[in-house]
View 1 (cartoon, rainbow, N blue to C red):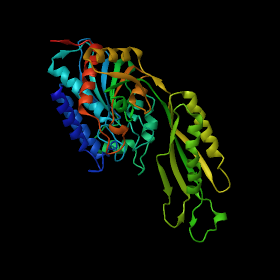
View 2 (tube, rainbow, N blue to C red):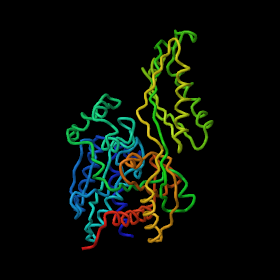
View 3 (cartoon, rainbow, N blue to C red):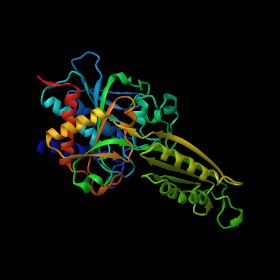
Length: 411
């Protein structure tokens, strides 16, 4: 366990160096130079474990240990490796590192699986560069069409394909993966909340993941001079946006049952100190464990927004992401529970308030997701931290689970 802990710490430390904001957290946007550095590291470690490495037309990375059964579906283990701006070192990479260490244990113990083991590292889960999120899993399952993928652009107007080519990736490679090639998907993730730490339990076996939607709202008004335009002659896009945003928390509170709503991004144009804003663009993130709550709040949010459409103000709403709440595989949950019991590692069942690639893949294969505690419940910030001992315990559980699912035997 001590050796495993040290290897995990080494991986996390190495990947944390690939950031656009040194000393200010991890900023690793998809198809950036930091992405390229991280993917080269991941591919190198995959090869050291004896895995055959490939990338798809999205830039997802796959490292495969072939099984003895011809054309058998793979047991996938991994997570994403992008980050939010000024995020932490564990959200995503901890799961990729877990996959690498499961493969390393297979190699060390000379295991030969019947079903292939595949370590995967997925792109753009956070949606920090191209919006929407979960792009790697949505793309490989066909939920994000090739055309929609090509049309995505970042805030600088750079398209996905342009950004891919810039770091040497090939967008012409196949993107969609046949679900028949996937036997199961196992993902480790930090909890990003306080429950496990408060309960002093090292492992959370996730039963369900909340449903979520993202709305992109554009408020168009009219620019004007800050000093010479009377207050009653203004069509101020920012004031309208602020008025709407201030009422959103009340909609979630009114709905209850754990429903949450967040505005995390707001852009103001032309963004001059002495110019009345003529356009604001902001996001609305809505989540709940029950689909009816998500749908109710979407409807109320749209009604609220449209009530501010008037002379001088025009508002449009796009919905780039909608994912239903997902219950994860009972069979895989039972297996994770069994392996935790056999290893003597305490666990509890838990629901996920954050979205993960696991929720996308759960419609296409059997999925298991486990959490480890987050210090002080913090995530998406430089202070994000999880104990390498807990991560090592999680790796042992995933290893034993993957060993069962791949029907691996020692040579």
